[in-house]
Amino acid sequence: MHIPELEVSMPYHKKLTPEDFATILHLKDQVVINTGCCLGSEKFAESFLARGAKAYIGAIGYIEGNAILPFLTLFFYLYVCKKMSLDKAFKMAQAIDVDTSRFKLLTSKEQKH
Image 1 (tube, rainbow, N blue to C red):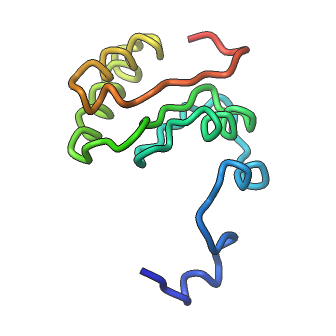
Image 2 (cartoon, helix red, strand yellow):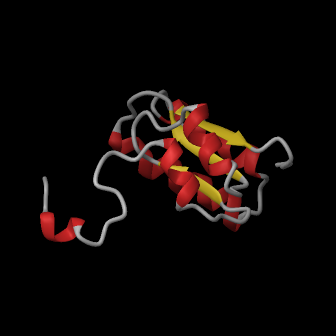
């Protein structure tokens, strides 16, 4: 849906690409989780990692929308509440079923889990 009055304040009036993020992202060791379909590509992840993200999680291909909530819930519970390592919390959440297995974790080369 196109809503012209909302676009007045938006910096982009088209589909965002990984190249667009170089001008708008300023991250500091955040874990970015992108729940949109097909956004787990290395090119997309690199745009966030190059701007300071600690890690990037995105889906490879099309993911069943109902799979996102259990993935996020388990991941955050293990990573935030149980203080599990990023890698281990991600792998456990990813292992829920075939849809959650489509999530991919990418980290910067300098970062350790």
